Length: 98
Image 1: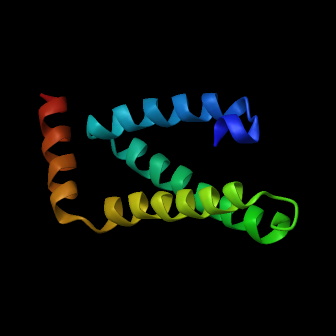
Image 2 (image 1 turned 180 degrees about the vertical axis):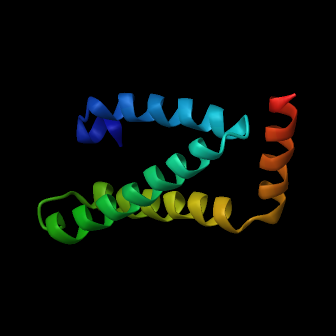
């Protein structure tokens, strides 16, 4: 989708997300909420783009954007609702602080 849309800023956003995900895996609480916010914002932007610009977008971009919105909504839902992930974060924070 980055190549089709010719969005050069997408590479920077992808790299930022990778860095934030690294800190999430380290158990950092701020990174968990930042990643949740990034994914939630992405869902809103993608859905708004599809709704407002659907007549100007190709079918591939519409379908790809909807798929990305669905996949991006799964991440924050799982991060907020999973007890196993909450236990993992607390375990990583305890190990990090030692």
